[in-house]
Length: 93
Image 1 (cartoon, one colour):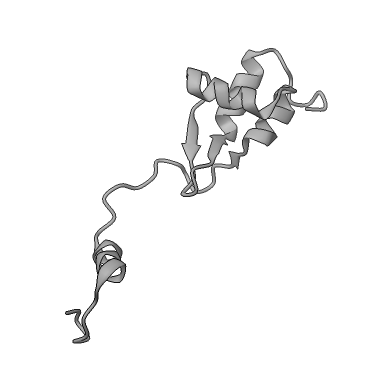
Image 2 (tube, helix red, strand yellow):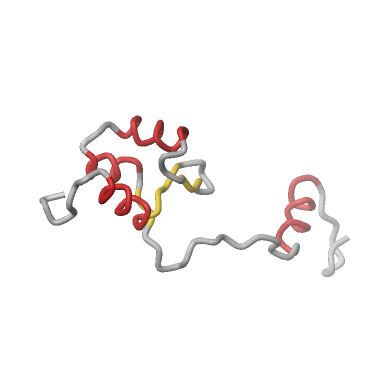
């Protein structure tokens, strides 16, 4: 039974415990940090989005996964990699 005196069964019962559980880990991403999609990163580097995903798997870029499992990339890290590659951000990129 829950605090209101009604019974909970199945998924609702297990979700109730999850909802009331304290958050044990907090993301290390600052709230002001802009996250980019693989497509946005690919446009900056003029490559295919699949290439950006390969870079993440190879460790060249750090990816963050959304709740839906999609990859996102920190804009500060992308800019740093752009500068290392010799591209200037003001050059129409």
